[in-house]
Amino acid sequence: MNDKIVMQKINEMARLAYAINIARDNLGYSVRYINYKAIKKAVEALKVYDKLYFYGIKNTSQIKREYLQKLSNVGNYIWLTVDEMSKGGRAIDIERINPVTGRPMTGSTSAGCINVLLGINDFAIGTDGGGSVLGPAMSCNLYSIMAKGLGLEGKKLKKSTDAINFIPGIGIIAKDLFVCKNVLCNLIDLDDTIDFRNLKVGIPRKGDINLPIIGDVREDLYNIERALSKEGITVIDIDLKDVLKRKDAIYKLNRAFEEVDLVITKEGPIDIFGLGDSVLGTMGYVGSYIQNSSGKYLIKVANMVNTTALTIPSENLGVGILIMAKKGNKYGTGAIKLAEIVDSNISHPKLFYEYFNTKEYDDILFEVN
Image (tube, rainbow, N blue to C red):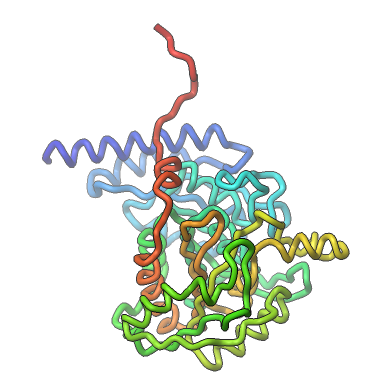
């Protein structure tokens, strides 16, 4: 074994030590439980692998044991934490702060995102009923895949605060798209032979969706549209007007999927100028205004329409591309391939990644001579 590989393995153990220290600091905040058996598994894994992936699991009974077993069977996946979530599965988490925006954290897979940003975990597994994976990920400028359309779903039927029945989808959150895709491939069989160029892609018409500060989504997506057109992908304007209310958004998205196979839009800034929470939304004109200023549109219904959905962070705070594909392996795989094209055509703030990738642990901040 050469010196470079030895150092890489040592660095992975040092990274685990850092992760455990940070997890201990956040026990009771973003971390519900630390799996100290991870140390033994990591030692065994490094006999075979040079790279480890630490992960956290949302503290919910909705995640099926078979999914957890599949992750456990991957040699270099190291389960490290059980992650806290927003109380009652609420769409905002008033007990935790978004490390990027300084606002209340988006829920309900809130702590999973925090633990990825803090460097505790490389990816988080969560559930999404009305945007509970996609929303938190986008609010933290992270990547996510919610794979309800590929068959990854929770155990029980639930009802949203606006009286819509749904089964949660299972999702993955990480700092890069490759990790999300890699985890997904270990949970289900993806058909990578699908020619995504045959799929029809819909985008909002001009004037349909206007984001705070960003403006018209249709105009903002011109560069993405050109990139897709160069790949020979058909892009069609679709009606996505008036999608603030969930029932209207569900109707419009289902109608869109009669015409196209995938939908690409942009959402955000998530929970910066408002708070996208239906509890607040029921509290008169003031609550409704706050909810409608949250930057959440179709992200709230992607699971309820049984899509495979991905978020890709942009250069703007709390803003990202949302890709949704109708149910089925063909369309879900196509969505992932489109996401890879889109991601390669988006710039990301360098300082953001440098800040959240630091691995220095200072428990005592003064120097002892």
